Image: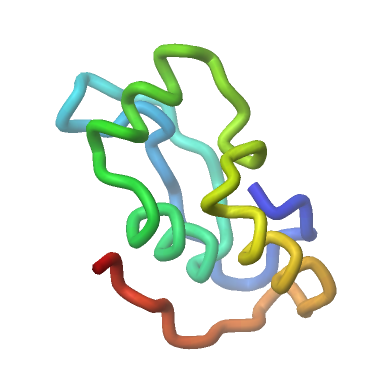
Length: 83
């Protein structure tokens, strides 16, 4: 998602949530995975996947992607929860 190289820790994300029938997974950094789920509900993720949209283009993720771009692959920080 963030286009940085993967580090030692990798998590697997379902672009179409398992609760919506998704089986395919993609590797992501733990901080990116947590940010996705803190930013979007499973319903929103399902709609994005169904539309074939690139999640990186979502305006809600732009500040995070700009901030994380220069961090090392194994960088981790607490993730803010959705309000």
